[in-house]
Image (cartoon, rainbow, N blue to C red):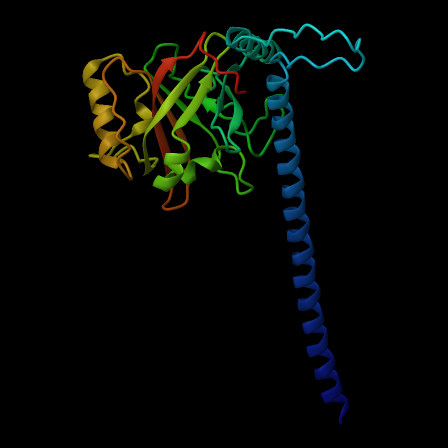
Length: 290
């Protein structure tokens, strides 16, 4: 083997070695970023779990049985908290959250799912919590927030939340593509410090954020104010036309609606939407199930 051949082999070896090191370095960087994202997502999820625990702990606990008592004497059973007391405790807990952060508007949850979060409202800066946690610090998962155009009595509370890959935030909403899931989870709860309320799922559908010059499309996110009967009917018609299946739930002018929106990857700028109708004001009718 000549010296020239040895030199060519050495060069090929160096190139391959350099490429290997490059790929190895890239792998390490991406692995590190992925691990960091998992750690950060877990930390953010735990922060919200702590808030949920804070709310749930506000309800009066069931009375405990004394450890020691006279054999011949049965203790007087302490009265169970009434539904009204449980409700008052729950609403008081929401009030405490508002004291911690005045941007707190309410609490949204779907029983039996991971969706159990505070909802923020900052009309002058609508997307302030797009990447902020309840503590106002930067957070990749953000915090669900109410559309800036919403106001008490607007007719349609539109709440936005991220579709997180770890199943947190509004990832649960995509399960409403299944009619079976809807049958198992037909009710969404949306409370505020002033009232508690339940909403019955009316429809679920795919959509997207449309360009301004697109015509003949249903921009569901423009319908916050439904105080005009014609606008209400227009929104309801768009929802019915887009619905993936028939829930049998309908709404009439004057009903309060709740619209939950999250990202969807079925198309560019895709969205997945769940619309629900308020069934009643459950104030004073709390069933004790927190």
